[in-house]
Length: 330
Image (cartoon, rainbow, N blue to C red; front, side, top):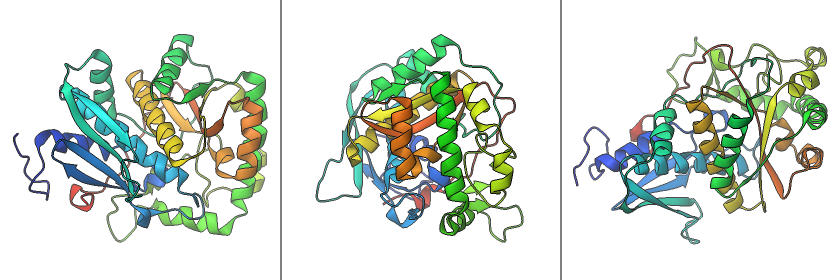
């Protein structure tokens, strides 16, 4: 097995390095990149980094866990692309709670067309915080994206137009709550990066990547918003003309969060391969009261984990920064 160089870790094979490179490009809440990677003789272990927690937005660590699960999904895609069947084990060691998953090499297997498309999409995937074209997705695209969710063991829900409008009411309520939460706004501000900052950032969200139009185009409540401006935004109209896919799980345990995060990334990679935009419509899942109400409005079975807006982009969006490999090894 050949060994890669320039990784700041002397025992990393080229395949493991490819897995880490793919995993570090996964989406994460506020681009916090809350993961650490441990090389294994036959693969990679993915750990959560609780030092990168978001206590106001994510007190239970649910979104942090889903972020790490997206990294797990990417590592598995990279291993499949290398011609090896990935074997994923979630929460493999109860004595090491920060160890969320291992991705190990199984039998040799030539990558299929889906593996190749998903691997190519990893570097192209973006969080889209801009308006979409005002039309719903083609039915075959929706079906394919839902199949990606099912393939990871989660369940997709595609609400109809009346349900999407009712969801808009809940999103408005959740956003108003966040706008009045000074701790939440301060936490977001710590993760927004500005051009004049004295140091170069390798995490967080560049202010240029934030949407210029308030919710539902811009999925992060930040200091550029105010409640009066929100009242003028036709949130319900925008959602009624959108395609929404909700991701649900049977329960609400850490294992369920991992399943949801892996399903999210599979869907997202398939969307990127189709040149589709993905925007989080998640405020209603971040506040317990509206999370339960959103689940009822959408008629979801089990536990609502994620709500996504999907559509055809109007503009391209830039990539967000990434931490160096040297900061990611455990």
